[in-house]
Amino acid sequence: MVSINPESKSRAVNREVLSELIKLHGKTSLGGKLPAYDGRKSLYTAGSLPFESEEFSVTLVDPEKKDKEKAEREYKITIRIAGRTDLYQLQQFLKGRQKDMPQETIQVLDVVLRESPSWNYVTVSRSFFSTTFGHRGDIGEGLECWRGYYQSLRPTQMGLSLNIDISATSFFKPVTVVQFVLEFLNLRDASWPLTDRDRVKIKKALRGVRVETNHQEDQIRRYKITGITPVPMSQLIFPVDERGARMSVVQYFMQRYNYNLQYTSWPCLQFGSDARPVYLPMEACKIVEGQRYSKKLNDKQVTNILRATCQRPQQREQSIREVFTYLLTCGRSFQSAGTHVVRNVLFNAYMSCLPVMCSLSHNTLFHTVDGSAQQVC
Image 1: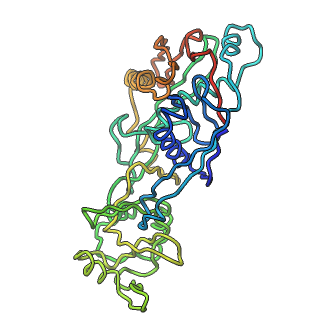
Image 2: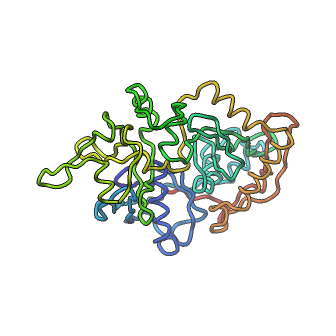
Image 3: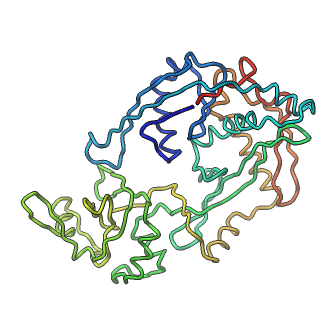
């Protein structure tokens, strides 16, 4: 079992922690074995690790923190061997010599197949998304659709099948927050103040979204939006020192950065806690690329996604072939310690909009140095 302290609910954070661990100890304490990690508690390697239980320490830097000491966070990682997964049982099941399907072995292979795309693409449930999979399509109101693919590993009468299909979902456009607000509210003129109703809509849409500053060319900071100020920027005043001196946001940006703010009738973005808030003008922030929009889409946006992702059967088949080629050639864990996925692939392409099934021969699908995959807890 892999235990990370302090705990994080984010798979992305857990993967960053593990990535740092591999950089520091991969060639030494881990014996040169690249693990396959599910982002939670399970980790698998091809062959045995040189220990039964070991604790490691790594430090990550949070780019959203200004103070260097506060930005650095130490994590304790405990790795303990839980057991081995014997691939022989899977071979017997696929040959019809064993009644019960070895679900744990299927899970191991599924984690291995998902390892490389989990590092390189945006993960949403069992799908992976990236702008490299095709042209991103504007679906309106500050959003765009990204193409991706869904994959699942399943046993069939033909052996193990890796089922792959093309998918799409909505993302925030990587534009300035001002541009997003104009598109989201269908506004033409940014000089008009926002109504209370508009402010509430923007607050709901942008809460939790990461942005990066653009008012300093030599220093870009990232923040996570926690709210929207209840008053316009022209009326927003905050303390600037311990003596109680106060200054408006407009004055502060002019004196500190020589930056003349334009949209003073709009509210500011708020970051941090209510006790110690940080205010930034919308025009000084840009939405970070690769953030999924998880709220409900309207009918027009759904229609635009369908139009953007519509493909002829031959095009759909080719897209899936390209995805599968990547899985065979660029897999991070496939290259490690004798683990590999063979390239004997049988494509059953249906000349319709049905998913294309990519099946691998069961007798050559996966093997490790000693015929087993080691599970680490």
